[in-house]
Image (cartoon, rainbow, N blue to C red; front, side):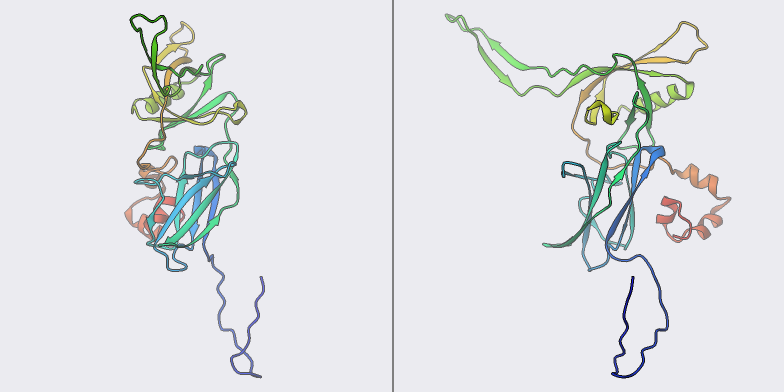
Length: 294
């Protein structure tokens, strides 16, 4: 970085009293969060230019833009109230590079930037990640058993009507149903078992993220009646097999409640009392991110 200072009076020296180097300008900086299989996107410069709204989208390898889920809904039109924000994306695909497209605008006037690529690490190639998009704290991993990957079926919607005096029926058909299949999973420890039921008991729509080498696209599913069975007959063993019926559904609407890695329990464990909390952070954004002094 270099700059050149010229005095406003020709032939006279110019004096520089103070220099501050701070982040500036519109930017989106994405970082992978491996522990929660997510990305954290730091936004800055939202107030530069005096625009009214901002929005954030994820851009995959095909160039398509997918809105990022916020606390209340997708972040496609958020009123600008401050210069910075932090967004967590729990639905980004694993093991592939993505970028984040940040746009600020008023009417037809806008500015936009694209983040550097970021790739979220994935678990070992025998495991899948299961998440509740609306409750990010509810997520777990599990091993897909041998032959346990779903065999997808798309049922036909057809009415076959026999007609008197004709050998061939009249068939009235409609679009096929979404994919349906049954997945078989294996868990090993008592903690794995508890995590699986904690994820499933809400009955919410889930996101399944397959290993990138499988060639399966991530899918939102409704889960039917789940069967949990011991792997061996000895009660002291906690290994379980899970039979999980799936129906593919659209990406659910609504916001995401809470955070996968930071809850009020985390805040309580980090600070001895309320005064310690108040003196550690300058804003609720600091409490949310855990960055002291912000």
